[in-house]
Length: 457
Image (cartoon, rainbow, N blue to C red; front, side):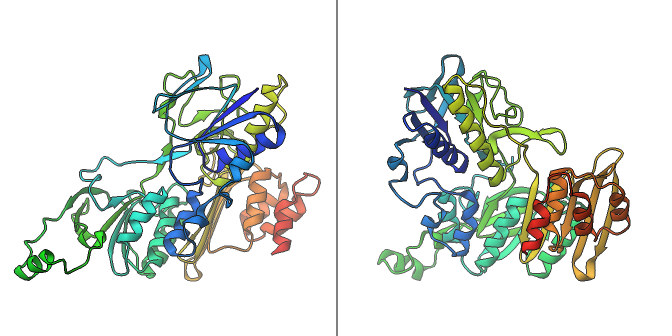
């Protein structure tokens, strides 16, 4: 019997397992995850912090017997290594699993910046349900919270922390907020908006050290109260205050420090496996690696962005889901000795962000391409900014802030690589005519999704 092994029990791994089961009812499937909780979505954790959902609301599948019903074997363990030459996975408990096809879908892990004291009690990432539980104990109303990083993930975490009523400060090494998503004008506008909402932001600033503040000697009354068992037993109440030194000379006190300094593909166990990795696991249009029968999907996969022509890791859930479906279909075909049946249309660089009520978006090559053209429209008083990047008569990237009317059209133009013809020159004079340009140019090019999305609004 064919055995499909899937490394990673997040969205990509779960969708792949379900897809394989649908297409190969009798094959054996093993899904390996390294966390004790049921499979869940990390993107739901901010909603948990806000109190909008409970832990079960983060679960990808609600039925406790979902995987058993599908005859998908769940294994809770960490992968130690993969030996592709002999088609074997080695787990940290020493167990080995032989496979016929393998999917690498272990996602990303938070980057730990080289800061003295980054491992101190009271410093947490915001990546797992265990992290969320620790944060909720400390992030009480009025608590002093310092967050490292104001990138895309950092801004989502910031939104959740602000909703908890904490006194929040954010430190970003870049010269603006979301520097990998937004240009200087857009990033600066987001910072101004956040500042007006009461969140203190330091850009072009580093955290130099974190140190627990020495605890004061308890008073006689506190000693007596402790002896007879009077007082709070809440672990959060005894958490040490942290002294955080910044590169601008400021020293701040914090009850909680959140490290949101970015993530990297979790693929260290693939060293010496024979599977080619750069930033992520390199894949072709079928999500297959350089090793036949071995595939990758999700935040750890490096795939072709057809807009830029570059191999990229695009760590967003819609890409993970589509890559998982493609990989799973081709795993089934491979196991039957058939050629690949499904091809990835390409990954998409999509970021739409709600930062304390301000909507911003970034698509494609938002920084532009060599020899390309650029048009920008900014109305800071109205909180609106639009930046379009062209290569010849094709829109290759864009930024927008507070400009929600044509987000679907912007995405459709960039993803569809629509040739705008004379409309490109028109948009360079008046970038607000995106809808008209799309309707006029998309005809006959087989891409009406953006316009249809707009009409539904």
